[in-house]
Image (cartoon, rainbow, N blue to C red):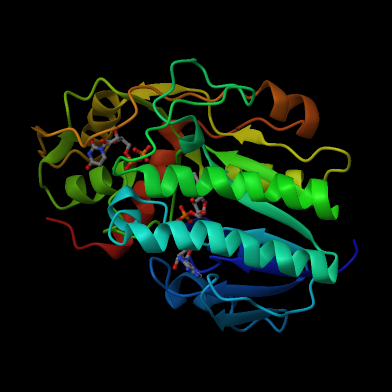
Length: 314
Ligand code: NAD
Ligand code: UDP
């Protein structure tokens, strides 16, 4: 295997830390760049002793100058709670971050991968979602800073590709969960597990009939690395687990697994919350020979085990 110099923006976050770990263990020289907004040094502290790992505090809204062969652009808060905290900053992170990594890729002739999202489909009316579907996105709602920011980032990736021949890859990530999600991250899997372990009631937004399709982190990272290294295919490509669950079904599974006496309580549904989401993964199967291997049942067990060690139980 050729040893590459690889930049991972957002490398101290949930997905970024798993990606850095995988690349470091493969022997690549990895630069993890992060402003520690939602990520933390703790997520990568186990990598600090490796000579082929470097941590750089930097904000992607400012240009960065490093000599690398590949760039994974993951920098962006992913939980609605955090991306809505400073919506303008979220847009800047997606848009200026994309311009800065694309400018770098152009200059040093690196291949650059964008971590895009199923949110580009908005509240989808096509189900399951195929890559050819253009989506149903509210441009002025509370999720728009994230959704539209990610859509413009895809536009920029394609325009740099067409105009400057930058070697791009775009992955559309569907809801992914696993160890190293922050306990206060606010996304549904970590919220439910932490609530259950602490013996609190599980907060279902709306009536819980909305659906999501949950992918375990190891499967997602495998798909991402395959896309980065495949020749002749740039995406966008959906990577996610097509097994679809209602949020109420997820809550019931967590309550049953943790068995701590929690009940389900119902809260207001935030505006523009997508009613259904499920990836069509035929393109990933065909182009990357990729499909998920870890079912929600199994992945939840591993994630619950992780949270048991970091949150104090009832
Ligand atoms: P995360 O919030 O754990 O990680 C994001 C990382 O980016 C954090 O370490 C954060 O500190 C860093 N960051 C944020 N703004 C930055 C900035 N301006 N400069 C530098 N670093 C910055 O979220 P995650 O789940 O690991 O998501 C990683 C990427 O994958 C994001 O781009 C997200 O949009 C995308 N994604 C994730 C999911 C998912 O389900 N996990 C789904 C779709 C897309
Ligand atoms: N959700 C919920 N309770 C929570 C957190 C989230 O019912 O404590 C719901 C949320 O309204 C959405 C789904 O779970 O319908 C997934 O939410 P998440 O924030 O994880 O991701 P996204 O909406 O971006 O897919």
